[in-house]
Image (cartoon, rainbow, N blue to C red; front, side, top):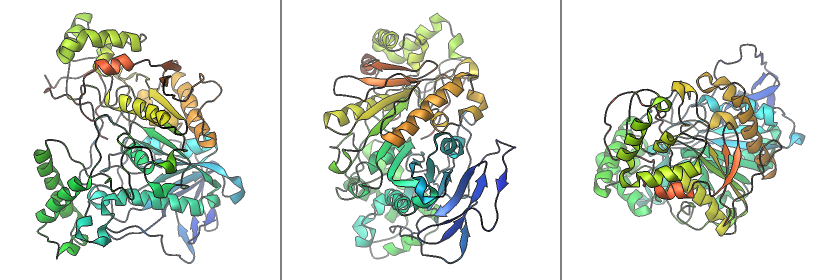
Amino acid sequence: MYPRKLTRSVISNPDFPVVCTARGKIRGLYEEDMYIFRGIQYAEAERFHEAKPVKPWEGTKEAIIYGPVSPEIHTPIAHDEYNVPHYHYVQDEECLYLNVWTKHIEKEAKRPVMVWIHGGGYATGSSIELYAYDGHELADYADVVVVSVNHRLNVIGYLDLSAYGEEYRYSGNLGQKDLVEALRWIQENIEAFGGDPGNVTIMGQSGGGGKVNCLLQTPCTKGLFHRAVIQSGLFIGEKDMLPALSGKLAAKVVSELGLTAETIHQIEKIPYYKLARAAQKAQRAIAEEEHSFVMLAPVKDDDFFMGSGLNNPFIEEHKDTPVMVGSVFGEFDQNYNAVYAPGSKNAWSEELVMKLIREVYGERADRVIAAMKKAYPERKIVDCLYVNKATRAASRDYARKRAAEGCAPAWNWMFNLECPLNSGTIPWHNAEEAYMFHNANYLEASYIPGVSEQLQEQMTGAWAAFAKTGDPNIAGNPVWPAVSVDNGSCILFDRETTVRYHHDDELMDALPNRGVMGRNDRKPVSDSTFGGGPRQSI
């Protein structure tokens, strides 16, 4: 995917490596003892209609280059490219493709399958958007089969047109239904790639973590996966998209396009970017009416999707599914919109730090400072300006809720490693992915000799152990108990990885609620360089 190993040899010929899927033969690549199959079409779909399995074919299809990714209404340009390299690819509505990395193409291999669901909210992103998503190293190190998936996003994946006829009944959940179809393809075909269809782990970060949360609340996914990992995908204050609101949003889109119930079928042929602009205008209008940001997202219909596990009882179909759930220390920063002072946060004077803390937290300042010292005695007090509450508290509460409702074990984690960039940068949204994918050595800006190697061994090892056995504990890591109703267990992945108990409960209580992404309503005080961390979209 990215130029990183100039010594890597590539072998490809008309007869090797060829795998026979249920629909026909495909040919991939063989690189450094790894079989790689890119751009496998797992389903096909017409706009606003459910995906169906691809038709069988004769001969051998090539699976050498990545398939197109979902069109995006707006493609975010990340501000942290030096830390999290991005790769923007060809967009097309025909985007139902997946990629496979495996060391085996024998059915008898039966290796665990780890399925990656990308971030980007429900609006942007792809299976290859970030450097960290490359599955070669994870498949090699852990001897697992890695699969990454594209699916429909934004207006073509989550616009609820159910009020306009039975054929559109599930249009508000098509992005999720695409993922279900991909999981069905895995069940039908993954043995041919050396995988075990009886041992499938789904994992996703940010919007991908939200999609995992949704799949855990989707009854028809029972048996399609067996373990789940949610990474920075839960937020305090998040609300389910209910039919009344999703229908209202769809009606505004239809009206903006000049369509009616009688002419609704024309929406299937309107150019994508005209449709996208209409969706943008409708979202802005609804946001003004509701006094809250409204995103195109899975619709709680009490049929296909039963609503977020944060807000609803966990469904019986997945109470027996083990879960890993966690977040990153800084994510979007607790005070997302504030710019504090030029230079590195680690070089600020004590006087300046205290001034900023009191400006940001007001009468809460002393309480926040005391709670920060108790939660993180090893960190500088300035970091209380960046600690994220929205994802941390939600991940913690989600694990405890699963324990309280008698579900299979849930393990809670945090990624806390400070990046050396700018003389010290708090861990940002996306920071953990390179470590659990075993790709941390390739990110020069955040590489710490000795530390990066050790931490990626600990994290990749834990993720792989969870995929193999349902328990992330491995030799070399501290003993990591599953969360119980009372224990408040959490592992902190850092220079020194530790397990702590109720370590930041007081800090979470002390911090103000800043909304779904921890945003502060205060306007930036300047445009000067800040010392916290990069700004990253979900």
